Image (cartoon, rainbow, N blue to C red; front, side, top):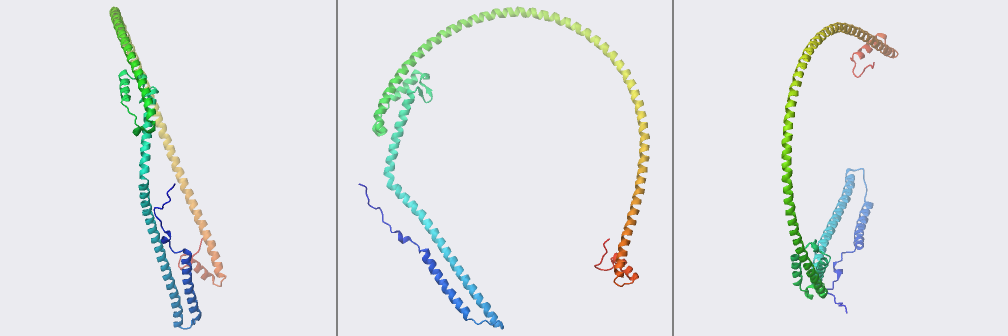
Length: 371
């Protein structure tokens, strides 16, 4: 039957804060009374804007209302700060409370947790042993094939399995199954060790036979090598004599060819010197003719440049004279129009001209003519 006894009984109402709706009604009621009082005072007030005292009284009443508003805003700010402090306190207290409850929860569960850890250790130990023995039966130990292990290695592994004791305190309910699997593994390792020792003996005998055969083959190869070396020495002597004779013949032919080459080179050098002298003379004549032609062309180009510069100067003077004449005509037209406008106002022609000239010279402030 499940134990229904409570560890602790807590009245959570002792931690409750005021209801927001109740607090809201209290605040709005207090503000409503203030509004009624202010409205009543304003309604009974006599407003006299004709006197300085009356105007100051009105301004004073407005400042009092603003001051009261500031006090209420400050009070509201204090309430918000108090609520923030309460929230911060509740948050910190809640965090500390959670930690304390977690410690007591862990302390309450400690015996079960320890029992579960012990059971898991037994299960993990049994699983590890079973997997190891199944791996041996699968022809592999730590990544090494059983077929590649020596007889001594297999015997050592068998001895280690013989020393294993599978008690229920260490392996739990799997102890008997693991003991049976261990016995069959020991038998398997024993048979594998016998087969390995036999294979090692056969390999040793085979290696000895191979060594004897290799030594015989080496002796035969050495004798054959000596025979071939003698033949190669005789052939080398014959080849060296033939090479000496060929070298003497080649040297004689080389000397004859060198003498012929020197003679032909001397003839070619003499011919080249004559041709070079002829070419140098031709080049000198051509250069003199080219220099003379260049001087003639330069003189003609200089004259053409001078003629063009003079023509450009004359054209520029003519353009400038034309521009000045057009500008004078333009200014004259504008001045005549200004004189006509002033004359229409009743001024004499001389006065009109004098005014226009003064404006053009900038003698009248804040007045100008746009040409």
